[in-house]
Every structure is written in structure tokens, then in C-alpha cells.
Amino acid sequence: MKKVLNLLAGVMISTIVESAFETGYLSVESEGLIHQILSTKIYQGSDLKALKRLYLAVERGSIQREVKLNLDVKIPSI
Image 1 (cartoon, rainbow, N blue to C red):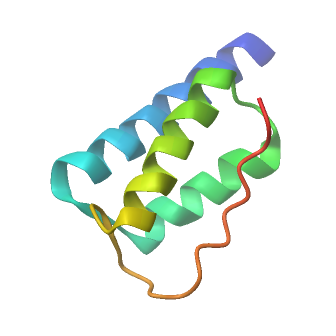
Image 2: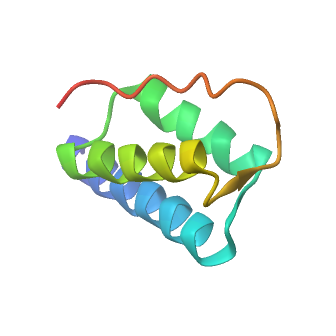
């Protein structure tokens, strides 16, 4: 069961990240999903790498956030 959950979490994270890169935009809903997935602690190293890529793109301004508050996503260490 945990393998299935890891797979689903990875698919969701990669979908969110790819969507943000395609649109140049990260919605409040997407950020909420990211927070929910991270809170379950069901993810893989590749998911964290994708989130780090997203974080850096937001920091650079390549991707705009719907919410203009401080980026408070804590990406766990790999």
C-alpha cells in the first residue's frame, strides 16, 4: 500500500511542477496540495528534487505565485 501511495504522491508532485513550468504560474491550490503531500511524508528523492527545481524557479521569478507571501515551503533534505 505504501508503494502505491508513494507512486501517487510522485505523480501528483511531478504534475504540479510540470504544470507550473508550462504555465509560469503556481496556484494557491497547487501549493496546498504540495503542503499536504509533504505533511504525509510519502514522497521520494526525485519528488524533492522536482520541488527544489520549482522553488528555485519561483525564487528567480520564472514562475509566479498566486500568493505573494514569503515562500515558506520547507523542502526536506534528501
